[in-house]
Image (tube, rainbow, N blue to C red; front, top):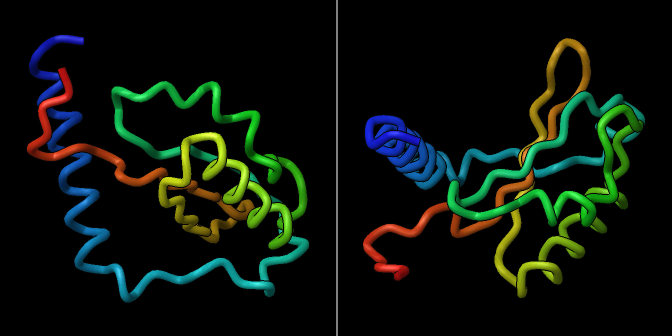
Length: 116
């Protein structure tokens, strides 16, 4: 990754964090009325320097399955255990083709911390 791409990625993550902090109260929590709708995508959002591939196996709710609040909660619990009890939030984004789930592993990015 070249320096320009790295800078753009950091800026994108910063904008996401700022937007989420501003709109934090307007977040729609996963609701039971989504039960049964098809999940079209499941994404893990985290610090771009973090390897999330090993955490994918901790997600019980899979793309292509009907949405289940119990599976989503189980996924959150498993992700928290796998990464040492960090905060995991879930955004459910309704789409024409189904639901997209974003599991957000916080802190999504370290600001002002030197991690040498």
